[in-house]
Image 1: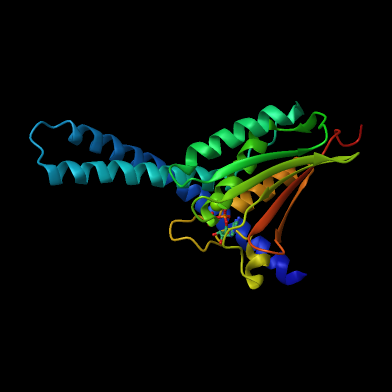
Image 2: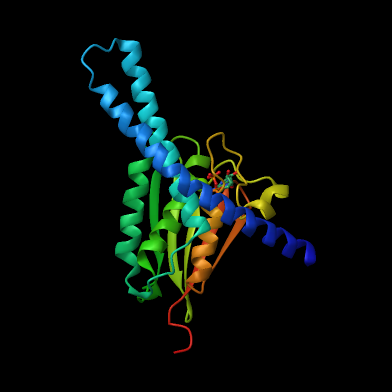
Length: 230
Ligand code: ADP
Ligand code: MG
């Protein structure tokens, strides 16, 4: 619809403008972080002062991470496509996600339906997508819950699902999940899913979100097994 096109145009204009701004924020931010580091080495800081210096450093890191996510979204790099084995990739992603879980006792359960041939993708970007989905699943899950990472293939496509039994998404919010900046989290960026959606699309696949019949959500990445046009 023309309403959707207008929105896409507006987003792209805002995106370009703010990507430029984000880029400009980087240098002063690095200076602030560097200056805080030097201050932190001063010998005569009392406890309160050194805590302030630590906060400056931590918040600079947080802003820098946010800027990186944002810039990746506004200026995505083209995928470096190649054949990749799925199993080691999934293992790697599950390990990375577990590292991020900390002490919440959430387990990532790997499941697989049948044997999966190698697939045509950008492995690094696919890892990024799956990690984003897993982290969302973990963030939505109660302590001690399981998140399921399952993969399978039919003749043409590989599918990889991330399923949780967490808080789920309100029916009215389902359509907003892939909108940039849609977030229900206090410290969320609302960029994880739009970035994931964009990356999967660039790899000639698609990403969908469903509410589970019971509790929680299932996100599925679908990717073609073969290079398109071969
Ligand atoms: P962020 O995680 O920074 O909020 P995302 O784009 O990754 O941004 O996700 C957008 C929103 O979608 C989240 O704030 C949350 O409301 C919802 N969401 C995403 N994944 C899940 C999930 N597995 N369960 C419940 N809600 C989810
Ligand atoms: Mg997220």
